[in-house]
Length: 142
Image (tube, rainbow, N blue to C red; front, side, top):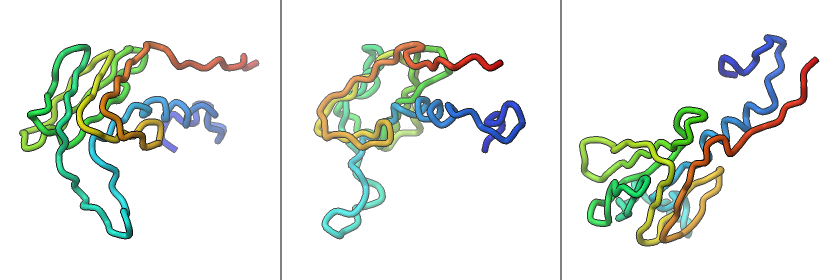
């Protein structure tokens, strides 16, 4: 595994490592339709941009008149209580990045990917980061 997965050097990885990795990536948003087989026909690899309104802590990042290719919301620095928001606008120079405690995405039906599951379609969804909302109690090690 990656460095740091075996802190004691005894060949045993901490049991919580996969859970911690999952928690870091729990808020991944796909603004695009699910790609795959539909009626035996493969969908295009690059679905068309979607018109979504995206707000971070109440500040408008993009509106329905500016289509987006994709949006991602992930935890920022550990313990910071902020999410990193990356918006990839259609036909733009580069992504828009910011950090926020709450992110709201709304627009015509869209799907998103969270906790390894595809959800939706929905018309609006808000993600709120709670600092230190997820923790583990570990037994004392003699």
